Length: 106
Image 1 (tube, one colour):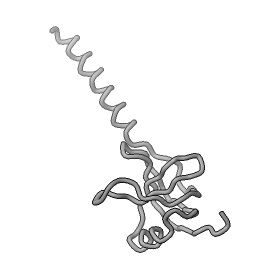
Image 2 (cartoon, helix red, strand yellow):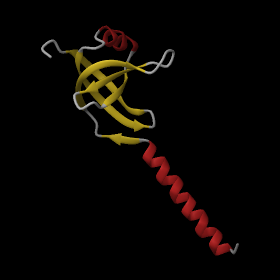
Image 3 (cartoon, rainbow, N blue to C red):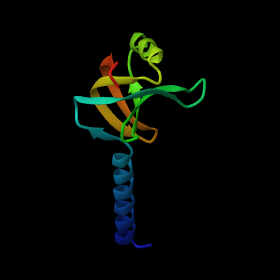
Image 4 (tube, rainbow, N blue to C red):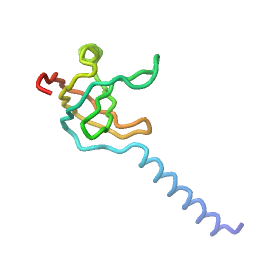
């Protein structure tokens, strides 16, 4: 293979690599509010706390142990979550929980 062809092939492969890396982890706008039911997804010992909104989207919750314990007590109930940041990964959308409030009127 001649040198110019080799350089073109390497550049194309680098482009595919960069595109694949950027698509596996995407940032979502900061400061969002999610209302939905608290769920536990996955199997032990890898179970994770999540919230499912009314459209059926599931968000994995990243929160402190204290907040996680509180939210587990509200499993199956409607909760309003305030998230500081979120990112899409291969495992789903992960949101960083700042505040959670149980909703009694739903």
